[in-house]
Image (cartoon, rainbow, N blue to C red; front, side, top):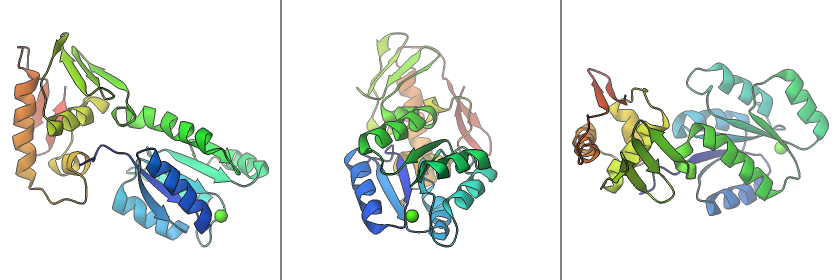
Length: 229
Ligand code: CA
C-alpha cells in the first residue's frame, strides 16, 4: 500500500502529451489521474483530491485558466499547487498578467527533468514527507527517505501504518484531522477501512512515540479527530 504517494492530476487534451507526461510521473513514483478537458479536471479534483495539478492552458470547453481560477477561489482546493503548461511564452506572460493564482508556469516543449523538478519543488512545500524531506516536531525527527524516526535522539520502532500516520501529522502540526481524512491519506481512497481502525492505530502510534518516555504529543479533539500538538 502506498497511500503516501502524492497524486498528480494531469490535465491535457493532446492524448500523446497526456500519456508521455503521465508515464514519466508514474516512473517517478507518483499516482496519476488524467483529465482531457477542463470539466473533467474539475470533477477529478473533487474525486481524487490531487496533491498537485499540471494544467494545460489551451483546453476545449473550460480553459486551463478558468480551471485554475476556480481551484484558487475555492477554500478546499486553494492550497493545491497548480503548474500551468503553455505552448508559447506570450501565453505565460498573459497568465501572469491575469493573476490566476497558478503557482508555477512551464513553457512547451518542456524538459521532463525540469518539469519533475518543479513538481517536487511544489510538493516540498505542501507534502514534504511524500517527497523524502526530513520533518521535525519538537524532539521528534522523521526521515521519510530512510523511514527512521527518533525522539530525543533515540530510535523509535514504528509499524508501516503508524509511520504513515506520523508523517501525515508531521506535515501539518496543529492541524486537526478527521478519521475520514486520515483514512484517505494513510490507507488510501480506494480501500474500505472502518474508522475504528484509525483509533486502533492512533493508540499504537501513541504507545510507540512514548516508548522511551516523554509526553503524548497527540491530541484527541472531541467530535473532530486528532492533531499533533
Ligand atoms: Ca491543449
